[in-house]
Length: 271
Image 1 (cartoon, rainbow, N blue to C red):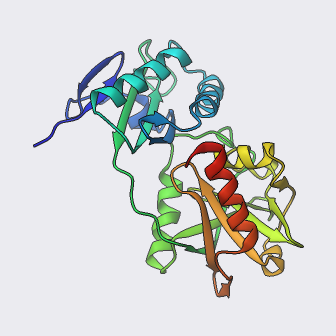
Image 2: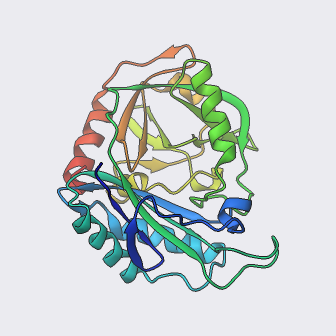
């Protein structure tokens, strides 16, 4: 049986090594942050952007004594070399570590970097709308938090009803995001995406598309889905994914704007 390494609090260990204290706040409270990124040709894709977002989450949650960005980067490359990785999915998880109560954190955070094989992606996906909301006023809004039970529950609902993912609105009724992805609509031949004020995660692919002036932010509502000629979603692990239907509304895939955005991302990040 082939064994692989993971990076645990400063050292490489076998990935079967116990890593979690029963009192870890990440386990007990969902108190922590993570980043998931792609490794291609033995190198992490868009690593600098991922580390910047991770650091913002660490600072927002006031997690002290974490590794520096330089240490995390070195650890990831060490892990890639140790496991002889060419292509994979990598996850960096940081929690405050064990604590005596929800109010009291310990002094030793938990940092784990692990890798797993990439899954084969479909050519397009289906989305459903749901009655639940993304709370744009939550203290976790915009953070890639390990408090992920809400997303997991909604994703199971979508799967049970025959869809790949679900679209969430914020508390005011604006479109926000999907459970695992950012959302984009092509309206009047322009690609638009919900604004950060809707509580959506500032996705890495989203950031690149906006920086390259391929996508603009604006407030969107569910009725805009009927105006859209194309819909797609993005995440770091899937890149740009065309959407062939939202509920009963069908879209032709791949649309030309979706294809152009996909080509741009492949060129800019080698996804």
